[in-house]
Length: 261
View (cartoon, rainbow, N blue to C red):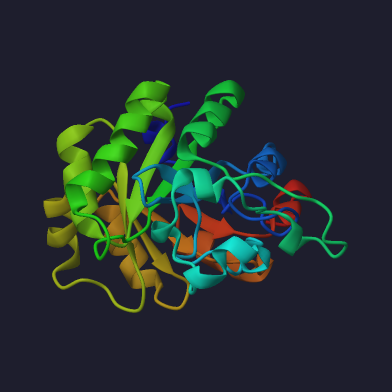
């Protein structure tokens, strides 16, 4: 199925940063464990210092890598991702922090690797481009992502989202057939429907605390796909689906597998 076709469906579960409740988030292990447990996978993408697209949520490395344990990087605090080259990022362990025994390492996941994985496994992928406007200009960020998607040959299998809506405008100019979604938190943009039409997005994803039945009905009637993040409570998931929400982003994929979500 093409991602664009999926956007008309309801009751969807997205694997938030992969299967992050049972594997280190945004790693290949998390993607692998998501298979069969979700309708599509969501990952976060940002750039290394030398402009390579890597999969990472935080703008610093300390929470989900062993960077603080590497003596040669001691002077690099607070360990911003964008201050490290791809070669340096590949020296880090992205898995041991997650496991109690601290013995299961995971390598860096690049966007190229993630796209290859979904191509080989016929899976749909939501790529969230992190806001990097303080480090890189908009066109450069989008250009790297667009290039990776084109080279991978999976344009029908991806949705691109971002809190930085300027990226979405450029995406539409470069990849007009790839669906996009505006991410928001805390409050809706003024003149919401008009604003989304100006962005030419197909979807709108908002935080769980912001969503309400009236806004969902308005968005759905206007033809927009509605996603809500991050929801791990099965009762709340049911409430959202009853409102008409198309998709929830969840960490609890084992519940989806068991039919609870």
